[in-house]
Image (cartoon, rainbow, N blue to C red):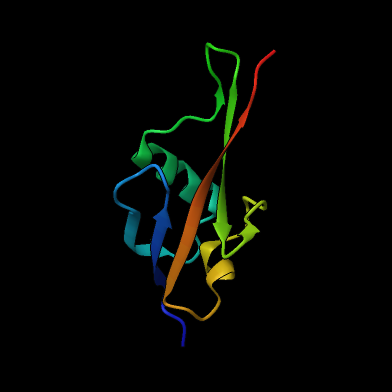
Length: 94
């Protein structure tokens, strides 16, 4: 029997504490989760005034979660908790 909610923990190296959501819906998409995580850490994707472009990727183990329409339930499978890592990529401006 799978529960309808799942605990999600997202670690971001630059943050003191991880993002924790105790009762996330398994039907929540990675896109929605990523938006919540970025907001919680005060991060914004895109180009900054110095010309650098910042993008963020969620990883499950060492696999990047590139399909933003995938649900957290699909990623977690039968597990009752899902631990992810948030990684920052910076593309230098011209």
